[in-house]
Image (cartoon, rainbow over all chains, first blue to last red):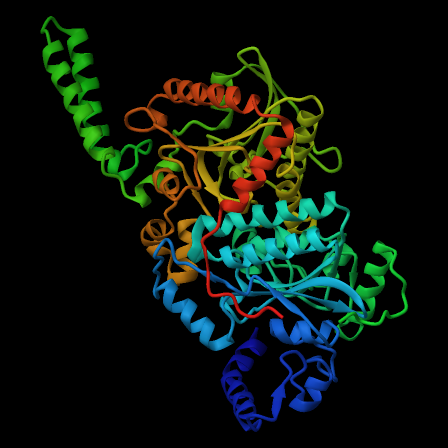
Length: 295
Length: 325
């Protein structure tokens, strides 16, 4: 124990030094990897699809960047872009929901936390959607639910597959029970996909929790996760408080989910396009070679 | 303080204790106290009416978890005849936090499924405080699918703080179990009527609550997160639970106004815990009426209607359409 006391004494100064070091990383061009602490050159990080070249850590990325990395260049048609949130409950906590929405809209340039679009993947027509985690933690309220349902409806009309990249803290508390109902709505829509034998691939990225995990994200015909993503129903802190037990190493990481049978595979971001295309081609009987994208 | 009464029920508890005392004295002596007792009883009714006429969302949240409140099995035994409980998910275990089985509502065979809380300490632990694990949801789904095969309506009762947040539950796929139920219930080819009898805690509640008719007891609650949970996240202090309860609009009346809940079943004066039999009769009546009506729909109409109901649960506005190409 004396070792610990000794460590406690010098810890503050160590912490200080590391903060200083962070402050010394020049702004704008460099970023520190949250996992390995490696100092990364931003243009290089971007070329590497926001994956740390030193430790392969997959950084969180925005919805549009995600879709850009995933889809072919070329025409896209956004789905449900005209839908905007309504604060029917006039919800106010320490801040008004309306103000939180305005803040998030300003910070992200999005109207809500899901972007859905028609597009192509190696020539294969599909609908893809991605959560914007920076928009109120990617939380699912009425607009996210509605856009997702519209995305499914588009798939049903066009008879194309759906791919969804989730990154979300769960249901949006500020829309109260309406948020909870989005779990049922999105799941019901996916049932129609299933009945029509149209494939849905769910790609879980760091993090996926609560109402999103317990609805659309787990309902893929094939469930995929990026490496080392945190995925679960209840957050680790809540679990720790409930069971008063230390959580096992690697708990709720992608690798843990794979081991426990919750997901089909872990796919590196660099392999995402090829892998998802191969899976979809397999499910739909499309040829594996790239088709010429239609205009 | 009587532990079987909540804070705001204490004045009622005191008055009733007094009445009880007078009764005992009256029995033991020749003095006629019946007039006195009658007056006090009237006073007690008026007092209860005035307290319960003006409850805050937070008080209702407490009533929804009242220690004497009837639980699913209390209702099942009062509402139905011949309940045969069925156990197990067929792949891992039987979860005592969810009960289910075949029963008769009058002449009609029905599948009944509900969260189950325990009354005394040992029973509470056995029922895991009404917090199901994946095997509970999987048992529920197994019974619902059986009901579909044998054309039995499904009646579910919601009363849970939420799905269990535990290591084992995560390992066995809590999220997937809930998600699958939501998906499968949306297209179940038999009528589903859900009654929220106590706490409707989030996804753990909804996982047996995708339905054709959603009804709530007057002092039940239904919310996306518990008031305490909401407060500790949004206000960073669980002391703000009362504010959170109010902001979320989790009461039956409010949710009825918002169009999410189809019907509010009024409770006996002073709450369902004051008269289990009467509360059960009211639920029974409304279940019978509802099943009658839903029974007239063709199966395809029933399923389509359920889907459209789900689609209506949203608050969005359409801004001017941007150029989509």
